[in-house]
Image (cartoon, rainbow, N blue to C red; front, side, top):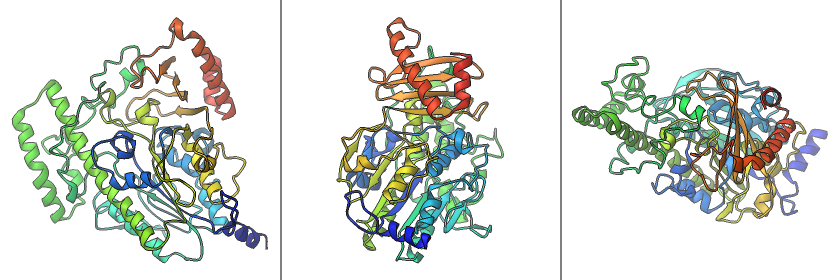
Length: 510
């Protein structure tokens, strides 16, 4: 009887406006490594995201949404649990997620929602708390991807991964119990490295010459960790593995040729017909130095943006499905990414750092019954806040153990206050890109970062006067008072969030 009462309470709960109504459906679309600088709703001029931009125009754009650990698996673990990495047990991509722990989909499932996860999962264990799941193994493949079903079988499915993921999601929506509310997470692989566009999107940006970021030729003065990283376009980005040049045979296991082995003969023919002339011209130019570096940057941008075209097109398919099935008004649609990404800023690609391009993620919500179209939300929010917000919007009680805070009230009142700061902690070292361990605090204007482990030092940035984070002002006399204030706030956050590693660092090397 208790379960039946709870279900009834949920399905006919009081809405945000105090009205008795049916619980809303929730669709969460999470991409992988989608940079804000390439999304129209965040100011990009590339035209690659018309459907994401539509979602933004019909809903709310959060302009200051951040992740607390900018790396794929930890970000997903935070999405599921509403807890920081040190509390949910997944600090880097090598860890294995305990899927039996308290996750928001299970809470919704217990409240009568049908729950599903489709596409990229990337947490090593299988999902729990879902009525349905069908996931790609590991990072997944762009062409003719393999999927693991709930019975543990792995099948190779024909098509482009972004399309296939959406096909499975829409098929589940068609077959669901239409008398129950639903919550589905659609995890898209795109536009994760190695940025392999759909055949129909090849060459879409070949006539575009992308301007170099202002700090493309960053020299990393007074920023030790930035100088030690291994995620730069000049040395780390590979001609074969990343840019599809078959003449680069330095890495035979991860060569341009190896990545076409999953393709059909028709797909491979179209692929080679596009890239072979590009390579022939590249070899003819015999580029060196900055000429080679800037060529790599242009190729990177073209492949990356072309890969986002299918991502956006499939978001459009989901929105169209809702329209055609009279689900738009009572369905909350979320678009986000597991983190941001460098598009040449500081001369980099990838993520990991606490710098803006990496920790700053898109977050867009459309909920026609509640959210006014075209709303801009400048408040600071963290991905640790996502799970409690989803639960609150679904009228499901939030577990006391969740560390994040629901920002559902902002949807009713866009001028309401929320967080004064967000917390960040990156653990992986030595990792794939040699980014030093660090944690820190970001307020609306300032960012204080504590690097530790291989070396112990601080960085401080004034984001108002230095939005590109080029001038580390830590240790300057003029910033002494500010530094002391931010250190106190950081310690308070570390203590509040029960981050024992950070507390030990602060105690030993303050």
